Every structure is written in C-alpha cells, then in structure tokens.
Length: 160
View: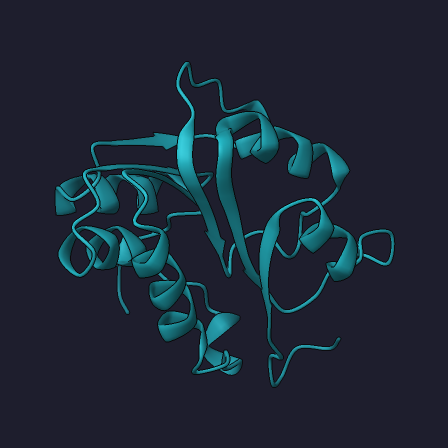
C-alpha cells in the first residue's frame, strides 16, 4: 500500500455482516420518513449517501471519532454537517427525528452512550441500532421497551 493511509478497518475485512442490514434500515426509515438524521459512527459516509440519495432526507449530520474518515465524508458533500467527536461528548444544540448507529457502537455501547443518544433525539423520534452484540448489562427487549429499534446480526470471524 505504500504511503497510502487506509480509510477502512482492517479487522472488518475478516468479518462479514448480515446482508439484511441495509434493506431493514432503509425499509424502516422509508416508512417513518424522518426529516433530520444523526449518523453516529458515520465513517466514510456510506449511510449519508444512502440517506440523501435513496430517501432524500433533508438534513443529515454525521459524527465519528476518526478524523480521516470524517474528512473523507465531508468531501462527499452529502452531510449538512460532519464532526470529529465521541458521541458521548457530542454537544449539539438541536435534536433529530432519527438517530442511526449502524455497525458502529457495538464495542463501546453502555448506559452513558444510550442516555446521550436519548438526549439527541426529538420527542417521538427513533433511535436505530444495528449491532452484533450488546454488553450483558443491556438487553434488546429492554431497549425495545424504551423505544429503540434494534437489528442484531452475527459476525463471522468475530467472537460473540
């Protein structure tokens, strides 16, 4: 690869996500039609492209801890705003109709992070999580009761 700095997660190449994530999330959002979405762990901006191009969502904000990925996503020009930040420390004045965290928070999810997401979503809005696992202290049925929409999948190559 020479001097090129990769924009991808090297560990991800040895794992495979469920092929049902994209249609599930898109079907859900297409029914709800949020006007504003926060993309947590936006990475290179794939979900921004999908949200803007396929669903025509009018306001999309991205946040990720990786500055190089955020810069790449910024150059795509599909996000209205994109920030380098841990979502726990993400200080944003407005709230969102929907928050998505697709394949991005499973290694860091805890009650503090969940409370922060709840503080960023509008009353009656939705938080969509797609992740392979949760800590033992957090159960899917409890999240659903709290209004979260959760897609669990299995990663081959990654222990449960």
